[in-house]
Image (tube, rainbow, N blue to C red; front, side, top):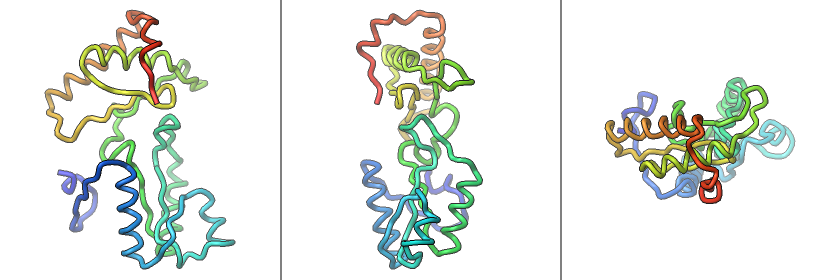
Length: 194
């Protein structure tokens, strides 16, 4: 299934691992083997590094997390991503999208729900996140929250459509319960996010 939904017209393979660290370790080994270069760097100040102290011919890959999950679903501007990719391409450096937390195919609107008290100020609503997660748990759906306000829904690849529909209904019901004031403040001592 993953090879069918992966973009591009080329032969594809899937390597399963136990964690994001597993995936990153595999990526580093593959990038070094493929390019014959040893250095793996993050995208921070990449242009400055290339200009002043890091020869491009030593860099196997640039790794970045396009949607920073723990920071509250921070998405970089498209022009930034495009420029970073262009620099990599021009220097024969692999561009690695390290999307471990969001997961390939998991960036739809229901897979990261950023709860804020006010859309203009983007003030995080940790109370809403804790109460909604707790109510979901009571009704049979396990989800957690990060950065004190981001609901994280990560269904298994083997989930059925019926199970997914029921989970979405439970999340919706839990949000409605929160908005109606039907979830006690007592749960705030129990529900903890990351």
